[in-house]
Image 1 (cartoon, rainbow, N blue to C red):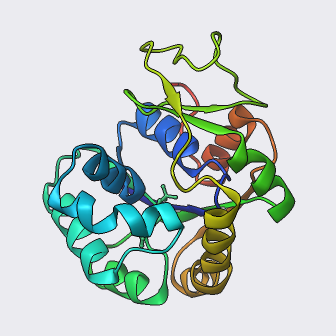
Image 2: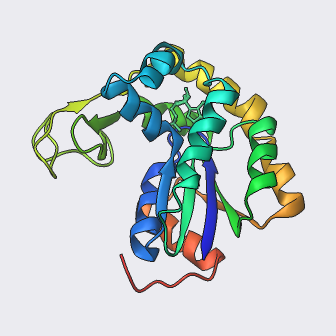
Amino acid sequence: MRKFIIMGIQGSGKGTQAKLLAEALDLEHISVGDVFRWNVQHHTKIGAQVKRIMAAGHLVDDDLVESVVRERLAAHDWNYGFIVDGFPRNARQAEFFLESYDIDGVINLHLPDEEVHRRVLARRLCSQCGVDYNLMAHRPQREGVCDVCGGSLVTRADDNPEALAIRLAAYHQETRPLIEIFERKEYVATVDATRPVADVQAAIRQQFDLPFGAA
Ligand code: AMP
């Protein structure tokens, strides 16, 4: 059983790397941001609660985040483990998580702030299947259309300069300090996220001595 947390600043490729690792090792990819975006898209009660908060770049209330994570993890729908993406984001969430779950390690993707702006503002998302594109590094073959499912590409509501500034401030003030907390208890592997996707993935697997065969 392998249990990981993936951390990193906005645009560092947490979702991309988590998906690759999950596919290769048969892990459940648990993205709290994806759970909230799904709820917004499907007009659920939770979606209504978080829509404006997310679009403005603020963090969702800890109680709601914890209940979503608790419920998601209670499903126990993994055979080989999970990788949690976008959680924990502050000290209280970290405490809650570490009280309840053991983890094998934390993947920490490192990206300088100036690169964050370039990447996040060029990011597009398929409105149907959720695949991530980037207008600089990973362009779709047809402009505005998903290569995988033909869905239309949209900009995330919080990928604009104003919301990004708020998200970055929250990251630096609340999330980044968690790395030190984790370093005292868990194995933290910091990986240079400026490198190409495949190289970052290879570095992650090397650091945790994970197989290279699949994916
Ligand atoms: P992400 O896709 O991880 O960038 O998350 C998108 C947005 O969802 C964040 O900007 C927050 O509004 C909300 N969110 C995701 N995870 C958390 C969390 N652990 N705590 C609070 N808010 C979160």
